Image 1: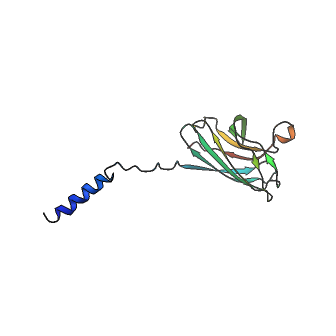
Image 2: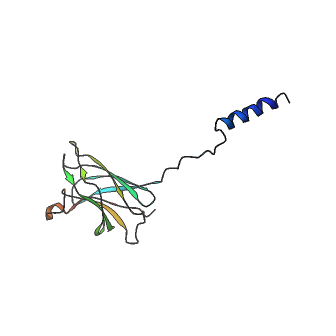
Image 3: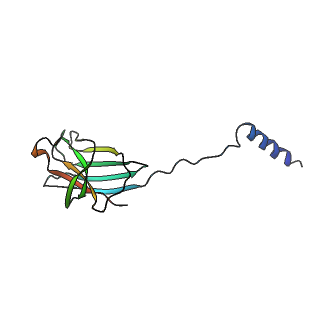
Amino acid sequence: MRNLLPALLGVFFLAGCGGGGTATNPASPSPTISFIMGAQNGSGVAGTGQVVKGTGSFVVTIKLTGLTPNSSHVSHVHTGACAKPGGIAYALQEVIADSSGAATVTSTVMVDYSVPTGGWYVNVHHGPDLSVPANGPSISCGDLPTA
């Protein structure tokens, strides 16, 4: 009985202070899917990429080196694969190189990450837009995994 009294007082104290609530665990982070960005057309621009799946969206981050310092480049998710190019599926953020020719860019695509049978790939183009043909060629490309 003597040991029971402190235990009961502890229960009443916790209940009075809101200790009887339900604990929640923070949401576990989404898995990260990695891919390689390979140089295209003799550019020397290469790096890595990651995809993080969300609900109704996914986030693509690419890290590149070998760019012309302070240059800018349009980038997209395309249908197909680096070896079998297709059309633009989703626009990504512009890739802007720093003074050393490196860039990291993160883009959110507002659809579920569900790679179609024909594939998706990330493509970084030569120039800041596609208004002139010289800007269109790919300088770096990475196939997106289906997982």
